Image (cartoon, rainbow, N blue to C red; front, side, top):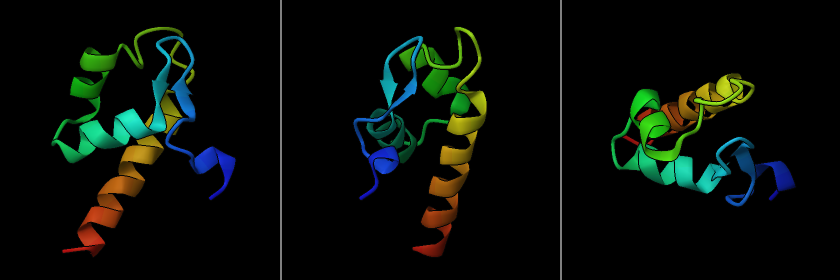
Length: 67
């Protein structure tokens, strides 16, 4: 596993939200807005928006291929 794919990777430095936390919330059915409200991600500088959006897209694609 690459370091950048680690569940402990900080996706949002402003809130300290990790990749693993975002993935868990996505798996619980939360969308990007709900994840932002729950974690504080995407509510600071906005520098993480593209990375988190891409992660959620990748997770949705993986979920679709597992059906």
